[in-house]
Length: 212
Image 1 (cartoon, rainbow, N blue to C red):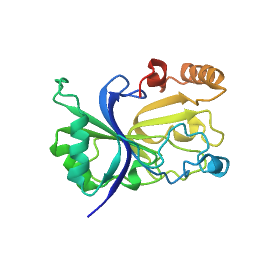
Image 2: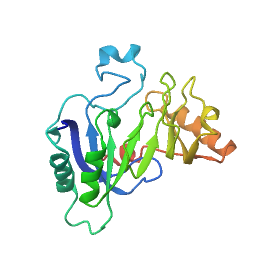
Image 3: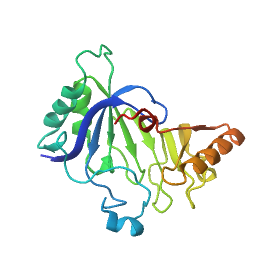
Image 4: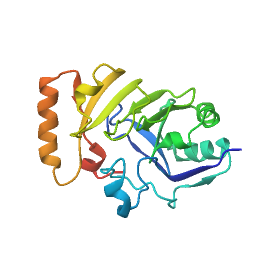
């Protein structure tokens, strides 16, 4: 029987990419294969710019002994007053594909959820995932080369947008890298999208709004 370690589960609006503004439960799995999450390891990590805390378990996370236990926890987070029958859960991390498996996807479907993932693309997803968003990292080998949405944090030396133009995705997004150079990175992303209309701009609207 699988065990799942989840940093946090919460109801919010999707802040990035194609589904920006959509009501969603976020299920943030603990752990990642590109960084330990410890600041002392950041400089030597495969991904050095992550802005997410995915270490351990918070008060609204937990350790779940079965797919049904975790799916029930996700379902409890969906607001009772939200009348949309098409529930939406975003499985993220860290790297969700270290833990997300077919039995959990099935359990979430049984509770009425469309299942989305946000992954670094270094692993293949289980059968049944409804929406695949891949965010490539320059120093990591990309294994998952098709899906619904490619969301590239920009700029990354060694992960220029041209490297991904021919991949089999429906939507291509550039997302300015957060940090001290955010304003400069945003201007650069805007210019690139203007010159290459296949790419669309993705902003971290949850940060702008001050929500999770």
